[in-house]
Amino acid sequence: MNTTTVIEVLESYHGRDKVLRLLTYLGKLTSGIASSKNVAIKSQIFSSQISGCRVILRLLDDLPMLHHVVSYGWGKSEPDWVTRWATLFKNFVDVIFNPIEHLCWAGECKILSVNVALLDIVTTWCWVISLHLSLIKSLRKVIQLEKQKVCLQQTESNIGIASRMLDIQQRDESLSCLRLILDLSYAVNYLPSGVLWGGKLKTWHVGVFGTVSSLIVLYQMFSKHTVSKNKMGNTG
Image (tube, rainbow, N blue to C red):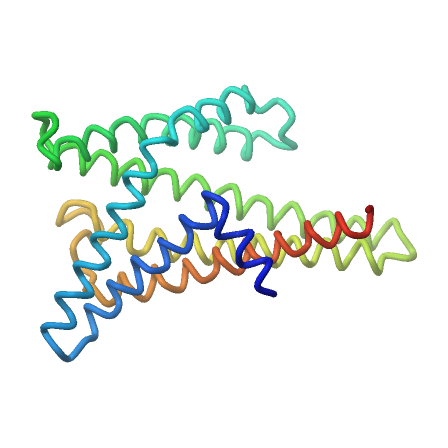
């Protein structure tokens, strides 16, 4: 990974968002383990401000999300019904998440008079459900890739390159599964007390889970960016 790649990722909206995500959870981690109360408070403020920045940036996500949902349609091109319906439900949840989060933000800023506590719970449930559906999709993909590898071994004599490509895809999806499990681990913590382990995790727990998940996201992003550039270079 060179400087050019880092700059290109940081110039993109999703690249910046993922870096801000990492900083948010690093702040939580620092605030949870800091021996100095002053450092802990400052780290929490830093984390909160960066998280707020991401929320504001998501105010512009509605149109791209709607475009994505419309482009996907009913998912008739999906290879199986599990992936199709998981994606359809996830698209629905993600579409309703955005405006509810916007209303919650407006309520916190005293722009609108709304029940912020209720809206916050609804957005958290949407987040948790969306993560569950994403995990189902990734697990399904891992199983499908394993089946493809078995079929390849049974039908092809020279499987070197094809098998390596499937291994790379399977490793990436396995990382996605790990990331989503980590995300679910701390997302549930924001649910009301009494729901699963809602409110049970400490700040540094959330910080660890979120930091590791964010590092996985960035690793995947940089890896895909590098592979994409290599392909363009080979075809150029």
